[in-house]
Image 1 (cartoon, one colour):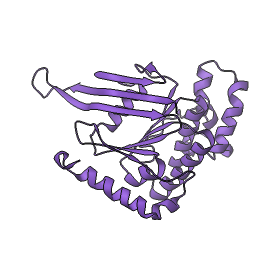
Image 2 (image 1 turned 30 degrees about the vertical axis):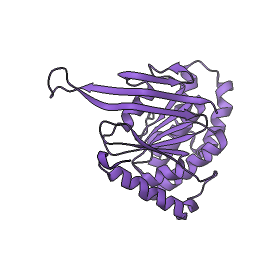
Image 3 (image 1 turned 180 degrees about the horizontal axis):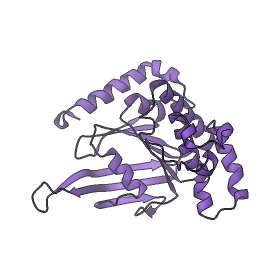
Image 4 (image 1 turned 180 degrees about the vertical axis):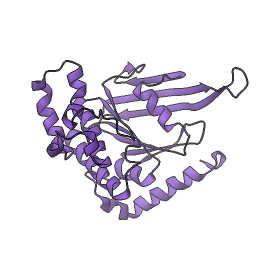
Amino acid sequence: MTEVLVSRGLEKCFSSPGRASGERIKAVIDFNLVIEAEEIICIVGPSGCGKSTFLDMVAGFTEPTSGLLEIMGEEINRPSPDRGVVFQQPVLFPWLSVYDNVVLGPKSRGVKPGDYGPEADRVLKSVGLEKFRDHYPYQLSGGMKQRAQIARVLVAGPKLILMDEPFGALDAQMRINMHELLISVWQEYKPTILFITHDVEEALFLADRVIVMSQHPGTIARIYDIPFERPRTYAITADPRFAEARAEIVELLRAKPEERQ
């Protein structure tokens, strides 16, 4: 398989005004990960462990202090359309319709409507928004706004989709709906996805591999290969292997650093 994202010895430090002169806080240390094409990788970990810091480095929002970080063999040092981001709070322009929000990326790069229009129509249908293309963000529910964010990222055709707790603000039933939608979208488009979450069940349902991070400073404590084949349904949550994996990951998250093996 093609290596989409490579992280080797990655480290991120921040200066702290409240600490001794020159002392720095290590947010992420020795982070080693390879993500292959068409994988869904979920990262879980305690609050403040550096999950979002790692995603921000991959997105190009902040630079690593040291180490290697590449996408398709090219160094990541700034944001780029080859990495699409879906945030927890939907980022949609309120004065633009759903359709205009979705096509904003290719339109701003000078792509002709005839080139992006058919793909935009297809994506809107895939996420269930084809009948809401002329609506504005204020007319949409939280779940519909997230569908619009996903559609916008898909239309841009990125090499990697980054999702930072995108369903964390939704109610339980809506999260289930969005999980099923994301699985459906993956089946159709086969994107490579890096997904940050604090929800272990969400990670187990969505991922090919679950990355468990340790508490501050953040690094990889363990990597779990998820055995369930695709396409998946919520029936897998009744599988004893699902419950066993969930219990093991929760126990690992609760363990003190010296107790991890």
